[in-house]
Image (cartoon, rainbow, N blue to C red; front, top):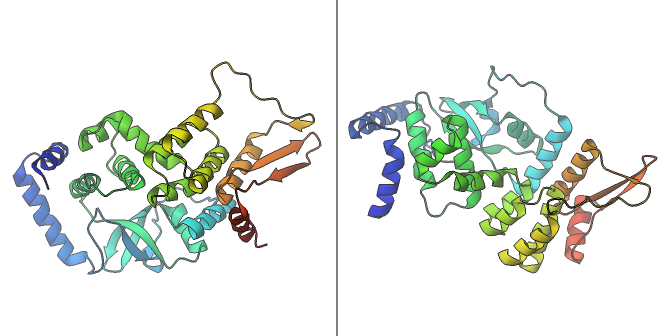
Length: 309
């Protein structure tokens, strides 16, 4: 690690620890705790571990008991196609027993998808400082992709109870940079997976974020993958799609009704499921059509396969 990177990392850690003595005491405590409770196959608190689903118990104090079954099934279908992008968080109870801290919806959907293991962050008692240290060190790595960085930022905010300004101070980044990364997690799962796997760049993703409709985001995403569009070309396309202030909304076709909030959500969910733009048209009597465009014969085959055609 270069001297410059050490200085950058030290700046973040200085906000967590008073002096080097405190660091050593914390490290000694962690080594002692790990020797008792850590199983050989489990990594440290900053790493993603694969844990067997049957070794995880639900937190008995979880206030949420009602889960939308349709939403769970949709997430399960997405996990089958894209994998689970955001790991759950668990607390180690014993060598092969864990209690869920966050991510019950992801856990349930993974079980529906037929997974036997799930990626998870593992917490141990009294490890708040070590968790922050591990996350900051993880963020400083050069080989993190944008989604991994965004997930680390989100995790620090959720589990370390930080605001965006405080997070920026911890990792030596300004608030706008932190915000841009966090916004990536609002993109449809298919696009997040593409960023994670290197299919599109951070520049492409930042352009897609400015589009409000997930259906339109997924349509442009497919064009990027099929046609190898540059970031500049995508930015140009997005500028043409985004309405200018004061511009009148497009008129619907004769007899076609504006989509209700519920129907719009269905349209967006279908677009996410098929990873392409989907158009719902609803007439005055409630009848309508669903349009699913495709970009090539291969793309048509992909859609037909998802429909079990």
